[in-house]
Length: 414
Image 1: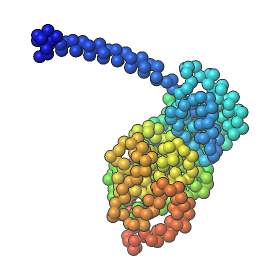
Image 2 (image 1 turned 60 degrees about the horizontal axis):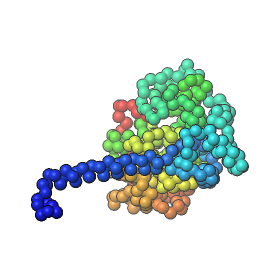
Image 3 (image 1 turned 90 degrees about the vertical axis):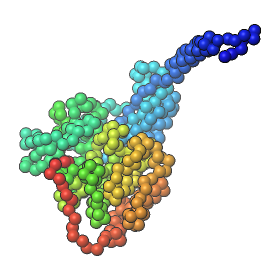
Image 4 (image 1 turned 90 degrees about the horizontal axis):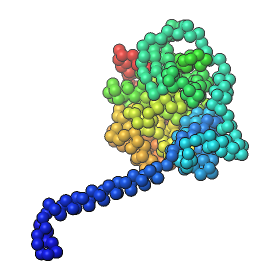
């Protein structure tokens, strides 16, 4: 009970109702004020995509270009291949209207004044024509292609098993609803890389169709599926001898790519395919094959910190990703399995690294640490010096043992 000014008792219910009334009015006023403030604070966002030839400091130059126009960069994503192609995606605020013709015109005019950015003014259709001219004739007789069951689906395409001239093949289709100028550019870039490589540890390219309504790529079929499924879905645990055989195969393939000035940028267990005789092959050279960065197979779990931070990077980004794959091979665990992909990325930015079990061979453990170390000098890794792998293999390799076979289940995976 509360005492009133006359010394009498004021009913608690009456006072409570007054307090509630005041609180309710104050709550309404606060909500309206917050809503009004939010309406004025939420900026208008625009997505800007640059398609250009890849070159040093391109991300920095594009960032400066946007800043010069008074735009604030909220997000930046880079998809590129070192065959000379690059897509830079920015989410910005600072352009106060939904009308973008003026923004586009200002971007073009500013880019034209900078010789190093002059190629940005070409249209996507011109880029497609340029790529098709570079690719040349990659077509094949589609009537000879026999398509069988679907074996996988991605964010923008489907993968089928089939045969071509009595050879087992994998056929990747770009879904009709995803066929646009940007997706065509990405698809053509992947074809350019595939048709230019030839190595026992890189998936073999058979042909592509880009002149008909459905875009498709045909590569060899790998009966063992991908390494991610082999380790994490089939729950296989590998002996050191098999770890080394797989790791050496990946290393040879990556060294070949780097020697040919190709940075994979999406090296992870899901993009490594297994075949007969413990052969491992590198696949998926598209700039955005998994698409959904929140999915369980998310690239973030394998991504180097410089890539996460949208900084310039080189082949060492692949070396970092290889370290994560090595860790997978020796532990048979999903990297950062107790974190979401985004949490994993933020932790890597802050210097977090996976825990290497004490049971791992000391020299292999040291190699993993040298590959994912924050010190950018990762030269000792075999991706840059194949001779070092030969030395490492002699150091690691256990005494002669019976050849271990990968148990490929009856289910047929890519």
